[in-house]
Amino acid sequence: MDDRIRVLLASTTPEILESIRASLAAEDGFRVVGEARSREEARRLAERFEPDVVLIDLDPWKMNWIDVVEHIVLSLPEVTVIVFSNHAEPEYLRDAMVAGAREYLVKPFGPGELLSAIRRAYEADKRRRSGYAERGLADSQDSPTKQRGKIITFLSTKGGVGKTTIATNFAVQLVRETKGRVVMVDLDLEFGDVAILLDILPTRTMVDLVQEESLTGALIERCLSTHRSGLKVLAAPTRPEQAELVEPEHVHEVLALLRGMFDYIVVDTAQSFTDTVLSALDISDMILLVTTLEVPAIKNTKLCLGLMDSLHYPAQKIKILVNRSSREIGVNLEETERTLGRPVDFHIPSEGRLIVPSVNRGVPFIMTNSSSRAARSLRDVVKSVLNEFNEHDANEG
Image (tube, rainbow, N blue to C red; front, side, top):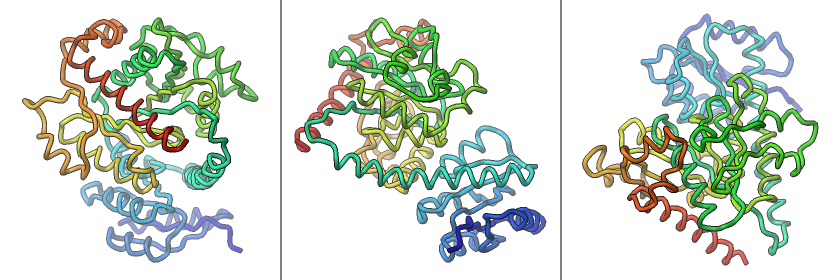
């Protein structure tokens, strides 16, 4: 049996195809199954060969190879897509990741970097697919009376939409509404702001956990900070370079342990589909996809919905929350829902004069301005989420 990773190459530059082909041929464990020199040929060969990995050169960017990435990800969810480009700017990386690319390499790169990226992305996707089956089996064997904490993950595909602000206020209100044990996990591992928005100075963070040989509930408890509302917080690393120490397996293990320790786990994520973020999304009971009524945000939200559909996430698991909702500014709501192909689930009205000072002081607006429209709307969101969980549990019982 041929266990080599089957790779399809796509580039408009013959020299690049030749160079990559030679790099893969010189290394055991890889087999090039085809080479595409156009967008149309890349689609056709991907569907014909169904390779393990498709390696796509995004240059020249004006040719819109991103459409090819999205097409392959949506039509062939078992295929891992890796891209590379001359562009190192964050917006290019974001567009590629939202379209479904698993790795983004910046030219020039050496054979070692390329081979490592292929192995890393391919193995991560393989683990994720096997993880679906394992978790499904484990869930089916659970006792029907066994209570598990609910994992609620906040996601956005564009910065500046207020995701973390909404997530922190949601978590605090969850404590107030349920009087239960609630923990918030900051998975924006490079630039997480949960601790700042809650005016917490953590002494330990996620990176302290993953450096231990084995994880236990007691160890996790020691790494949690406590907000004055009673909310527990597992903060992001204090330095961006520490983010690479946290692997997807760490995220899954931490969340699985927290699920047995808390009633609700609220997760805030980075604006990208990294393996660590996907690990959280996989295990989540509900995903709150936060957007605004702006064209770029709506476009990215639609791409995100398509990607999550290709990952076989149940539609009912995903809720769309429009932040800063207003009839006076932004795209018409009805037009937004037509574009997304589904209704918007929740709205938080625009109240910048209230929320901006709240953010700057590190005090959730749900605590200091509880009668505001934003606070009332957020309480409705929390109640709706809790009602849905209760109904699901009742039906399962």
